[in-house]
Image 1: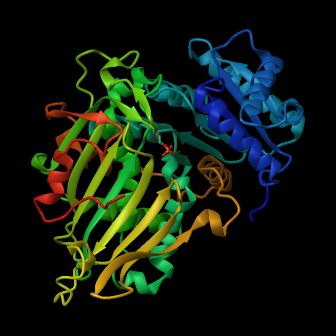
Image 2: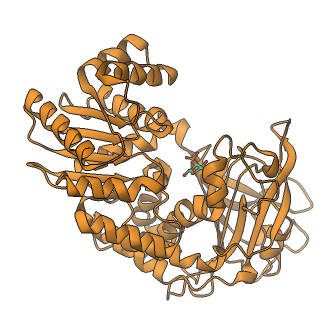
Image 3: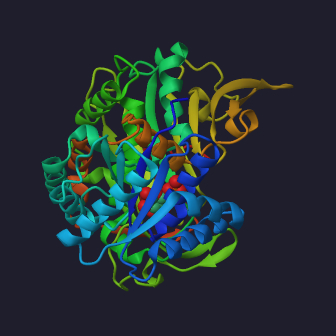
Length: 483
Ligand code: BG6
């Protein structure tokens, strides 16, 4: 473990949902685990004028208590490690006041001037906040300064480029940590270990042995109270461009020259650049209607609060991409993501090539002909290699069975993604963060799907999406892995 870090961790949007549900609990958990040490201090910044240090400490206490932390422990942490600063209209005097507050805390605690600025704010406020920080010269400090930006980073290639240009005006790429919280998940990080430490799989990881790859990010939840955001985003911007594409990059990338941020990120970027233009005939977009989830009736998307009755926002997407590289030429990668699906499931399924000659024609279904590797990102984290065995008795019958590994059976607890990511920010390791080129390349891929002109097919909540998503695979002799 690296040495505990001294820093002032400033959270813009310090009273918001993300700060209360994810960022503050992660900072607290890191503190409790002794990973951040005595000198990692938190400054919440938000518009609430009446709050003050004391009011914010109570808000932090309540937020942590809601997540199960004993209130007395939460309050003791807040009293010792947490401060608050109001921001008004975001003018220069606001940023000057934030700078004064940070310098005051650094003087009081004799800190060397290391600073993190975490933008837990709506995307519309990213640019003005970065500019405010830059103009107040808060982009540099006596120690190091790092900027953490939540997704979504832009809403298409042009806006992502614009935002990158603006951020680069004030911050070096080495100071910028673009979050995709999937990269903080243990099981996602394990993809690198799985691929690059197990020679047996790496030698099979190519077009000679792999027939197709499926990546699914399915959620059973709807959009809750997030209509304001989701109506503008839709599933391609919300999940496919980032989380699903990160999984694609980790599966498709070449072996990096070293296990470090530059080498890994540059291989991911290369892999994404090799993805061919998506054919609009190979995209299925859907929107959930009413249905049953977990045996309870749920409303359709257009009946969710805040959603337009004639909304054309997709809540489901399935599409095929091809990676034009020596390794993957001709191997389809099917991506699928959706809300209100049959169940929560994120997984990567690698279908290996079928046995060239099949001797067991009358001994089981055609699925038996290929081995399958299933990497489950969540829930039931783990992996399974499906192979065939003879079922006992006569006549000869074959069954496909998993040889599996389950994380939770093996390891006590999986850390929350945000804990991992925040610790990496404090340690200055960018491996798990998205590079400027990567985010732009990912937006470029989905340009054909972002113009809002695609047909949106209704599907019933609690299912695996529109039938056309099955068709997408069936016309190539494939089908989604059976659950
Ligand atoms: C977020 C999306 O990035 O990821 C949400 O904005 C989605 O819409 C969430 O629900 C899923 O995250 P997880 O960790 O629950 O898979």
